[in-house]
Image (cartoon, rainbow, N blue to C red):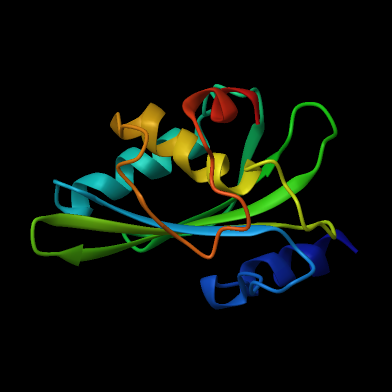
Length: 153
């Protein structure tokens, strides 16, 4: 039984990241880091593989990664233990590395108290010192209103 689970996990790819729908809270954001993606990827990958310290106390776990391409993690919330899928996809752009991120709740949910936004933003601020408001947000059910929200969720 364990063998089949390992084979299924190995066959997964970023194209299998769950799509956004009306039954799961979600958020998408983009931020350009003024470094080459070859430098950004190992920093991001290492942070998420080696016990990322979430300011809100959530638990990030690596699902899979693609060298210099993407990192897919899950985050379990600290209080109610909800699980969200988060993917960070990197692409080279003029002026640096665009990090395109998506976060989607695994459980049925509509309102998420900005959790999906904070799932991604907290990684950026702790790993790359990105300031609140410096990200481009789209498809967010509820983007965070302030930094205190991301310290809580």
